[in-house]
Length: 606
Image 1 (cartoon, rainbow, N blue to C red):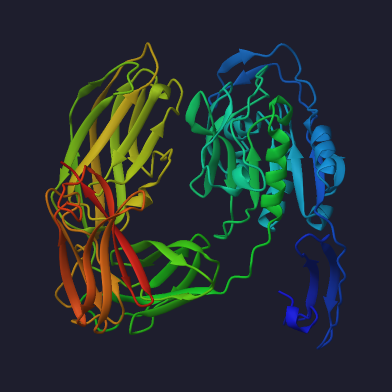
Image 2: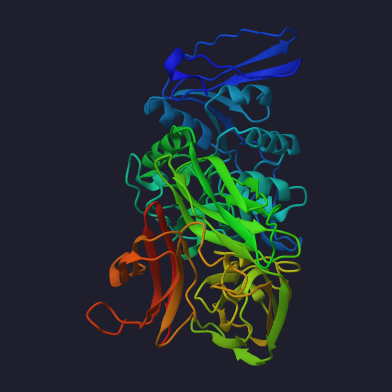
């Protein structure tokens, strides 16, 4: 970053070598130059010209003229009327971008030089209704290289997700450029807001439902985002399946790296230009330099030396390692909400989610304990029929008696069914976390057998990693629903295998007084009628502990005053401040203390 206080000066220490220097600034045309460092000091100055944005639109309209549409196994799904028409969306996108005030260069994907792409603020890969999009392997590889180098991208096309997920040679493109886990449908209805507060839907325009005219396969795709991406809009006919996906390579909420429109721009009705403007503003939004930090202490139960524990924050993946006292600090973080994960071989994994960095200030006291690893597995064999074409589906529960903080979870299922593409399946943990294991994928396969996440892949929303840090003990629930007609099946058996350490709480060997404020998980959880949490204070002082609903409404204050140094326990009886019993559901118990705020989830089941 150049120094605003000294006229834009900068200094980078480099060994003698040949380099490419890329200079970018908000609302200015980027500059890229070659530089050989041969002397102890090289002085290179830059002057960037202003623009709203300098955009390259690439027309991927050349087709292979395929005449059939096939699934992933090669089976023919349908015969096309003839060679697909060239995409026309690129020209309209360029016209609309110019009308919005942007500088635009339009080229064909085949003729464009990828070496020039990083000189633009971002590029648009426009496939429109092309039913053989991104068919050229060199073009796909160039797009992968471009985004790997940090380039920003608007990816558009109504058949891109399908081809990326269906043909050999595309998997890395699907994962690294599209950020699509699976394709699900073609004709899917209208585009409906899903992540309603996302900047792509709110800034500067408020985006509502956008009507679509579906003519053929190239008009719209529906699919599932990868775990590192976000579904911003979904389809009216399939409200869990994405039509617009965003990949954000930093935690900063104002801007991301890739926006994937899984549709032909020309098939969209009123509102498409507003969505285009929002997308450009989002890709071009200035991200303030990161200057926040997260720190704390991670200990190994019963050990005197706590060094060598790996502490990772996500998103971003920044890492630090604990010293002998267990202390760590990760700096250079954007304002945002993070998950902090602590790992060491032979010990349980622990993590704290919902850790907030705000205002560039340090977030301290994110403490954890790791325990010697234990592993348990429990199974059920319900052998129950799955109702055909029923959103009610079938439920089965499994009791996990051992109490341990989960560091890893695997789930086994054995389902016999004549068309698993009809099935939706979710798993709910004892603490109420829900993960969708299967979402109508797999087509006409006649069974669903294996372990998630080794032989089977979690469809999402959610991932098995969402269970990390929770207590495994209690009732697990599996739900399976067949949501289309004419196929039947049976839930034969399922298992949960969890590994981790001792339950969260004040355990033998833990220090009597914590080095910083700490809030432990609710126990039991789920609960009825009472649960408790343990909290710790490094010194005598003011502490407030209160229960909140998922909507953020304060339900009951449990502690509000001065407490002594050490660990304390407080009980919630499932009632509000007036003594009225609360309904079943998810609640949050939050602790506020000087320089500290933390919360844990509690599930009330009646």
